[in-house]
Amino acid sequence: MQDDSIPEELEALYASERERPLPSNARVNALWQCVSAQIGGGAGGAGGSSEGGAGGSGPTLGGGQALRAAGEVGGASSTSAISALASTLSNAQLIGALGAALAVGGVAGYQVGVKTAQGTQASKSNREATQKTSSILEPQALEPQTPEPRTPEPQTSEPQKNADLPTNNDGDDLSHHTEERAKSERNTRKTNANEGSSSPSVSRVREERRILDVARNSLDRKILSRARDALVEHEQLFEAGLLREEREAMMIHLLRLEGRDEAADERLDAFEARYPKSPFLHQLTR
Amino acid sequence: MFYFFVISPPLPQANVDVPSVPPFEELFRNEAPYVLRLLARFGIAEREREDVAQEVFVRVHAKLSSYDPARPLRPWLYAFAYRCASNHRRLARNIAERPTSDLDAQTELSARAPEEQLFQKERHRHLMDLLECLDWKDRSVLVLHDLEELSVKDIADSLDAPATTIYSRLHSARKKLIALAQADIHEEANHAR
Image 1: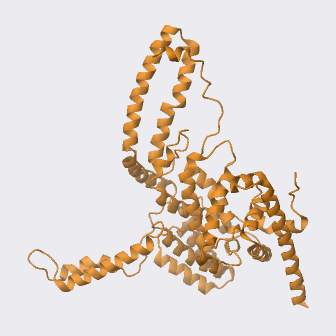
Image 2: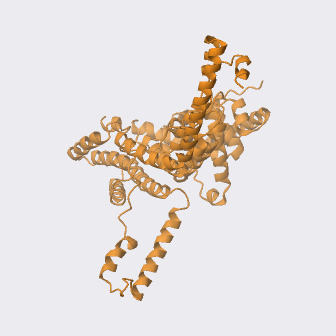
Image 3: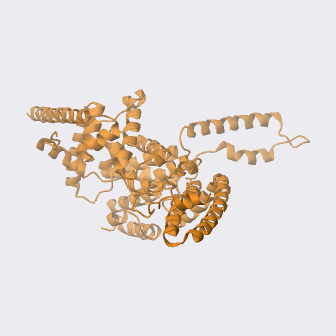
């Protein structure tokens, strides 16, 4: 056996890295949003293992749950029931009981088949329902997919513009307008293409993260004006963003650094009421 | 037809304490922070780390049914992280933009005193810079063994490599790291003069 103990010279080097803090819950929650969005469509398929154990119970795995239930009905529970019966009943009773068990198994199998077939459709509604429930439990984790930034949105303003434009007898837009519409459609496609490279919310969360990183770095270096600019920018672009909790925490931190304790206390009260289990709270209330 | 069941030997009890595969969300919530930290140690830039972690968990989700719950979870999970990080680093566009240090750990809202934070930052940056000088394979083995504290056997199983190869990579990586650290100290000393 070879010696794999760490040399002393390296122990000192590793010491600081071993104390590296784990990423915040807000970050993990944001990542979960992206992961669940990506696996959402095919989640049920992965849940149907032969062990019946990998079904999962997350918001995305509605089909998996149905299949796991199927595993329990058709697998382990029926074998244990048979062996338990065998030890307690006489042969005649056993034959009767087995017949009944097989009949029940058949019915259960049929129901499972129906459930599995419905699983794909059900998973979508399950997801929605679970997300609604979870959003009540964990408001910061399950913000609705972050709203559009308040940047100009040519395609959304189109209908308003169109209402004032002349139309022909069939209600179709005239030529100058169709050109405008084609342009806006091109813009929409371009936006979708940019965002569709990975999961829909990834780029947005990344943008949120980038802005907050600027704010945090500036706070670290005590460049308060830059930190404020970044936080205000985040607030304007992602008012109800996934990383709002983090933004609010930093804003309180900033107010403290600026010496505006009254405003900081006010914000802190609101923060505490909104995020009573926030991991930032113990740092902010020190 | 039923007689077959009657004369067959009693089946083993199903209530034996067999570990089960954890539900995916539970697995994610428990392990995602560690995967993100591992990716940082693998040198994945902060702005790309979430994307790589997402890829890791999507693959984990697809392969969850193949996980053997009798074996430890983390080495199995880290094998996905290793492959995704490896693929990510192989891309030319990621090599060009690879950072020499990681700002993530420095920028967490920390309860520590500012001087201590600064000291930690410097040491952390120092180690990350040194790790960046290592070959990827050496670095990954070193990180998995010395920082993530996996055993050589677990690493060998995860990376599909013989244990002797892992030992030799580990020793070579440590040797290089010590040499780099010492060279760095000398350089700093010369610079100070």
